[in-house]
Image 1 (cartoon, rainbow, N blue to C red):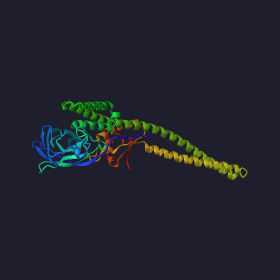
Image 2: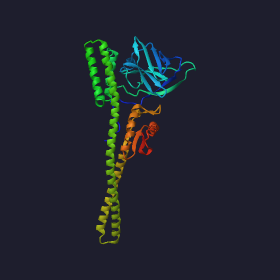
Image 3: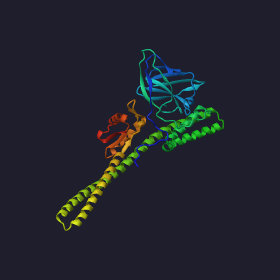
Image 4: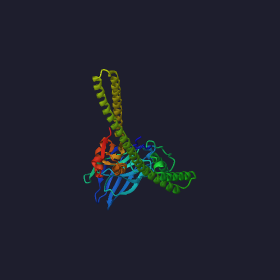
Length: 393
């Protein structure tokens, strides 16, 4: 069976578009941006860094927005649609505060509800985003970006009566388990699970939080590392499986071609026999009965060969259609016109493997990603005659 995609328990999705106002910071003056619905961000460029101070009033818990979410994460969004995780928004008595830095000199701000603070892509649950600056002195542009790349709908909510970092550690291990990190990143996942078990044991013994929280933080870090590693290793496994299947398909296609040639030769020979018997039948009344039987048998043989030829040709077409590497939609950021980090890793492996195949590699991708894939392959130096791109219907 040809394996062209890998099913993960935590689904990787194409994401949903969200508009973000990206502001170009002036070299000297500070900028104050309104965060809707109830906050502000003061930003100032200092050397090669942008200093950010965020204040939000009347902030409800992340669980109120989505039961399985445990933290607010602040993102800097570049004009190219890139994301930088600036860290967790601190929440005290219903108010959010944060100080952070980024190297971006033009960016927008998103604040999303997340299962834990170390996630690498923003959720679709957007709590706050900046608005356009007032006046005409500051340049800005609205940039559509993809959010919600990961589907957290299967995450189980964590009990609300535990410290926030502990809830995040529990969720982080769930997220890693969702991409089968226990299989594809076994070492890191095992260490994360051990740390979380230590946290649970310490909570059960009412250990001081200043001892519990560092262990919970380490469990989150290890869970996120295993999540990233599992995604990369799963993609590599898909590629290796596809290469193995392609080898088997080439062998089957060769055997099929040989059988097809054999039947074609037999078909031509039998047709000649039919013509000869027909001629003999016309010229020999004495052997008419025997000749008719032989001719009928030969005609039956021709019909049988023709049926087998048609079946082999159908199977040959099925094999040709099966030998396709199918790229999922989350490999492409259609809005930005680029491949995603996951797509970049997988496509680099594919371009490296193109030389191993004798026949051109057939790659299927969403219709709206064909031009993105062509540009990536061209930039990677892959000759056009080595790849056939098949748009998904």
